[in-house]
Structure formats: C-alpha cells, structure tokens
Amino acid sequence: QVQLQESGPGLVHPSETLVLTCSVSGVSITSHYWSWIRQSPGKGLEWIGHVYHSGSTKYSPSLKGRVTISVDTSKNQFSLRLRSVNGTDTAVYYCVSSDWERNDFDYWGQGTLVAVSS
Amino acid sequence: DIQMTQSPSSLSASVGDRVTITCRASQTIHTFLNWYQQKPGKAPNLLIFGASKLHDGVSSRFSGSGSGTEFTLTISSLQPDDFSTYYCQQSYNTPRTFGQGTKVEI
Image 1 (cartoon, rainbow over the protein chains, first blue to last red):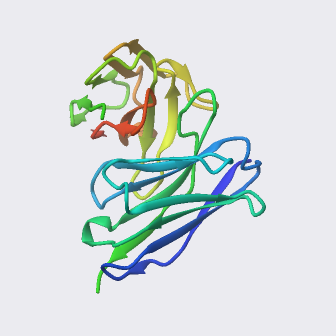
Image 2: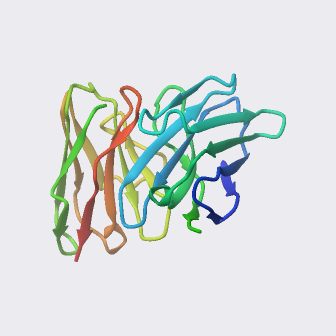
C-alpha cells in the first residue's frame, strides 16, 4: 500500500531554513503529484504547494518567495525547503499525494512537528 | 484565493443522530470539492472526492452532495468512531484551500 514518511529536524531556529523530506513507498513517484500541507497547533490546514515528477511546481502565494519543493525520482522522494522561518511557521507538516484525475489528497504521511524557536 | 466556509464550527450530537455539515465556496468550484475526517493527533483521511464520490473503504453512512458554491456532508447515523473534526477542501484551482473545520462532539 502507499506509504509516506516525513523526516527532518523537529527544531529550527528563527531566520534559518526548514528542510523536510518525504519518502514514498508502495507506488512510483511518477504515479501521483505531491504536496506539503501544514497545520499550526490547534488550527486548520494550510496547503503549502505541490510538485510534479517533472519538477514543475505550484506554491501558495502566502509563502511564495520562501518555499521550494523539489522531487528526486531516483530516490522516490520529494522535499520541502522553507527559508527565513519564524514562530508562525511552527506547525505539523504533512507530505501528501494527489491523484492526477481526482485532484484530492488521498494519502498522507503521519506528520512531523517542527518548532521554530531560539 | 477561493475562500471555503464551513458551518457550524462545532456541533454536539449523539450516537445514531443524522448530522449535516455545510461548506460554501466564495466562487463556483463546480464539483471540485473533497471532504476529510481528522482525529486528534492524526493526519486527515479522505472521505469523499468530487463532492459526492466515496473514497475506497469509507463507510456508506457518509455521503456528500452539492455543486457550484454550496456543499453538504451527511453522516446518516453517527457512530462513536465518527466523533472527529471534518474539513472541506476545494481542488478547482490553486492555492488549494480548506474550510476551517467542523468539530463533531458528543
């Protein structure tokens, strides 16, 4: 079955860069497209952006300029880089797959909490 | 950005109740509307896609309807496992946006 697993540091200092990687198993990374979604403590869900296996991307305007999502098809992984973080970037970050036709979020990683603090 | 507004924000219900949650979009999204269930400390799970299509393995007591700007999620007979937070989400365009959530409590 499709499984996604986030990895990366749980603590990032203000003004630094948050880097997370999502490892995909059970399906080829070419079969879906891939998103990052975050959820601040006690809050709702915020889409960060997505990447296609070609490397083409779409980002949330609210984060554009700070975010880069990339894909490594040889490793069946995709990654998130968020620059110049501050306390408002503290959240649980999820990596998620989307079906090409349905455009929903069908498979989710378990999520990883990233705290921004000095 | 397309704004998604859910109502109510929370509701109290009992096992066996019929529950309806409404989601409104700030512009037409046709049927590009998905529903998710989230339990505390867990990732959301897809329930319904395309406004009314049940995702694999989801109980038939969940149903969705609507098109354009107004949508509903109905739970026909609430079960103990259904006490969760529910989110709608539009996939008509980017940025993808979610409703603020509806918490279903006892």
